[in-house]
Figure 1 (cartoon, rainbow, N blue to C red):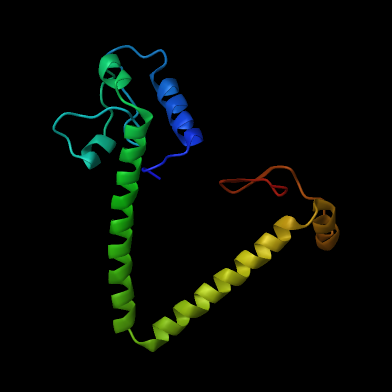
Figure 2 (figure 1 turned 90 degrees about the vertical axis):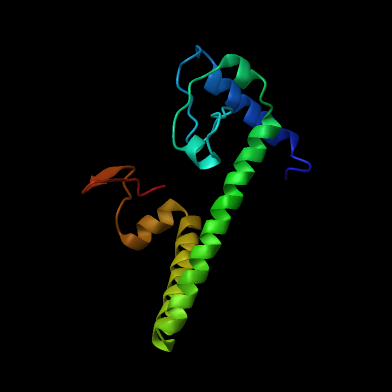
Length: 153
């Protein structure tokens, strides 16, 4: 991806960079927790993502979309290493707990795959077919507890 980034991706990053700096004045906060052309001097990558840094037009204007893509990919590489490390520890713990837990996890994975298959099949059904099968008219939106539900989504 970094060796030959698609032009459409670089254009999208450039558009986001422009939108995030449009109307900003020096000293205004930039949104660096999740995205940002800003670098905080002397801060690690993790520290940069944890705080807003002041907008500096000259510094930000020198950043190219390729540099932002590089930083995004570095963050993903770090996230992947953390996930894989946690996954190895989890797998080791499961292995020490005996075959019963492993069997239960396999059954849960299989049940999850079946639920996903059924949800995908149901999602492909036309709404009138679902309504006929359920014997009700699906509502566009309603509130159920703390949730706003769209039965037709």
